[in-house]
Every structure is written in structure tokens, then in C-alpha cells.
Image (cartoon, rainbow, N blue to C red; front, side):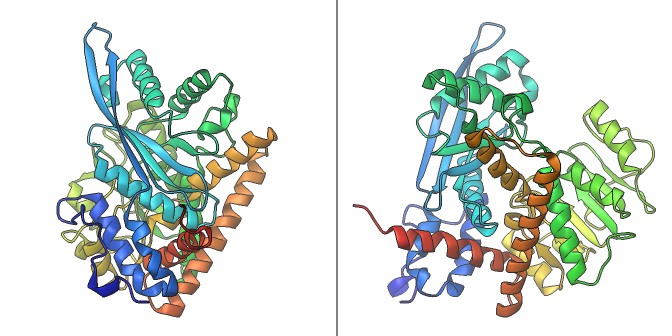
Length: 431
């Protein structure tokens, strides 16, 4: 059976690509993979329709006595393979389109590395830097209460994302537990160790990025020592990746964060830079590197480029300027479909987000399992299991890409979508 049947459009009638932002990018990526799905293509429209999306009002009383309202979201994209899994971000630019796309990518990501989760994502449109600690706690607890009907240890498990952290997860876990009448450590992951968090979770995404980057470099005949790396973002993903590359003998020659872009041809002192960022909240003011324009960052001479900030950073305007041999997507959705085509035509290997940054959700899975069993692993065990899963996922996707002569992104979507749709087919439709 061909798909779409009788020339029907891939997109639902109530959705159109134009103006949909990140969700449009996700839909275009799904559309590209449909011809490779064989008989499962008859179920493909499942992937372009989120299972459910919740928009909530988050009112809190500010410290000055005023009442402020913030808009929150929780989207469950697909639950065919297991409970929803995906982070919560607090950011002033959060939109429903963004959260829908992120939930879709979580579905693909979880399936691509074969952890037993569906995809979900959440967010609140708020600038947390404008809130006091008390206000931030009230936003978190009210938002958790509003999405309480969707989340649960066997239903949907949030985690940290942009501008959220272990403390936010602790407040979420406590709020859910109080509302449920029993402590439920497994309702979120990325918690403090003292509340059932997992060792290795904070560095997991960056470690996963480094692991798949090393495997990709090996396939192209490149050794890590001596290679030049450019990294956008210096948080848990970019910062950890930078340190691991530095420790392995690579030279991090360019970095960019929300305030400044820096370059040093013989390699930036990453330990010193990360100390500066921890102290000042940004790389701005770091003296031992040259300040460059934001646009120059994308033109840096390097072998490895790691966008590890926000989505849509690599686009048709800067993709032709990239000088790297390999792009490793530490962020979610950093490359637009137009940029993807340009990089593919230029023979620049792109290791997609749904594979490259899956280390975080993999260790989140480990945390969830540990919470259920109340038996906790050592950090060495966790890192070993993480590296093993990431390497196996990379090579299975690499093999599909080689066999079908397609990009790694399309191959990752082939693997992920096939697993999701096989589960959908086996479960059938009810009623």
C-alpha cells in the first residue's frame, strides 16, 4: 500500500507547514523517511499527530503581591512503546510548536536508542532569570499541579531541559508526591542524588555526544587527539563535551554562548574557561581567547562542529560557510531541513540530535529503573552501560545509512519510526 493513499497529504488537515516553526521541521523530517518504511508506511500519519497536547495557565503570586500568569505546555507525542519521556524547559520563547516538535524528536530518539519510552515534552513560557527563588518554586509547583493529570511514573516522566535543573525536578517530584499521597521518586528523572537521582546523569548527554562523535570520527579515519572542535553552548551538554574532548587531546578552538563567541587557534584552556563560566554565568570576559563576531563562529576552521544550544541554529544562510567535516547535534533540532540538504551535498557528515544527544534520556532510563528497584548502580557501571548503548545505536544507524545510501538523520528516523510503527501495528486500534 502506498502512502499517502490516493495522494492524500501527509499533514493533518488542521496543520500546515508554513509558520509552524520547529514543528514544521519535524514534519518535513518525517515526510522524508516515509518512502523507506515499507508496509509500516500505512501507519505513518501517526507520527504527524501528537497523541495529546495540554496548554495550562500557571498563575502565581509574585513577591511584590501581584499575580502573574504564565503559559505552560505538556505534549505527549506517542506512547506506543512505553510511557512518555521528555524534559521541561523554562524559557521566554517557549511555544506550542516548539514543544510539539521536541516531543516528536523524543519519540524518535527513544526508539532510535531502543529505550522503552514514548516521546513527550513540556515547557513554561517564562524567563526564570527574572524570578526570585521563591517565585521559581511557585511556578514549578503550580505547573506540576496543572499537568498532574498527565504525568506519573508509569504514564509520563519529565526531566530537566533548558533552564531547569535538579532542584526544579525535586520540587516537581515533591508536588506530585504530595498530591498523590505517597512519595513517587520515579515521576521525574534528573533529580538530586539524595532523592533517588542517578550518578552520571548530569554529564550523560555530553558524554553521549562525545561517544558518538568518537565513533563517527573513527568511521572517517580521524583520531580524536589533535582534532579541532567548535562548540556552541557551554551548559551541561556543550561544557561536558568540551571537557571530554579536551581531556582526550582534541583542541577546542571556538566556543559560543548566549553572550559571546571566542576563538583560539591552538586550543582554548577548557578547564579555565569552564571555571570562568561557573563563576560569571557566561564566557564573556574570558581573557585567554579572541572575541569574534557570532557569524564568524560558523566559519571556524575545525574538524568537528557541535551545536549544543537551541534549535534552528544551522540554516540555509550559514550552512555553506561550515568548514567542519562532522557536525554533531548536541542540541535538539539545531539544523533546518534546508541546511541538512546543503551539508549533505557538501559531504559534511551530520550525526543527528535523535542519536547524538540521547545520552541524557538513556541515563534517565537508568535512573527510572533504579528508582523502581530501589537499587542503585555505581557511576562506573552507569557510564559503561551508557557508552555501550550509544555505540550500538550509532553502528546500527550507520549500517542502515550505508545500505540505503541515505543520511544518518534519515537512517536514524528509519530505525526510530520503524520501531514506533511496529509497536503501533502490533497493538492495533482500540476501540
